[in-house]
Image (cartoon, rainbow, N blue to C red; front, side):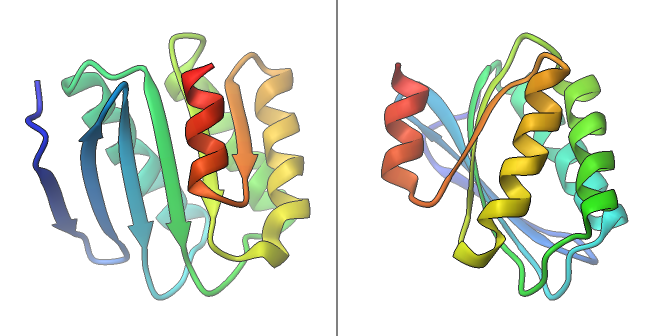
Length: 132
């Protein structure tokens, strides 16, 4: 089990921080550009850390300067659903408010496949949902 200290990692296309918080694993991921490959790699890393730390509640906050295409979001939603399945509850916060409409599309795709997930514009709203 991971201690309360945060763990920072730098990968070729993104940086990621994991922090055990009360009742959930907080993840902050950022990078110079997001695409299908980058998203796939960081979601695989998040899944591995969640399994290793025995956390089934996650709050994932993203900060990338660009938005994925609708097709890329659809693919990521399918991939995360197959990775995480029914065991996880995932709150997602994107720092770019302009991405909310497309993020809601990805939420719908994932939820329709059985993933317990929601997108939020603030960390506090995401924390409330995770606690419910």
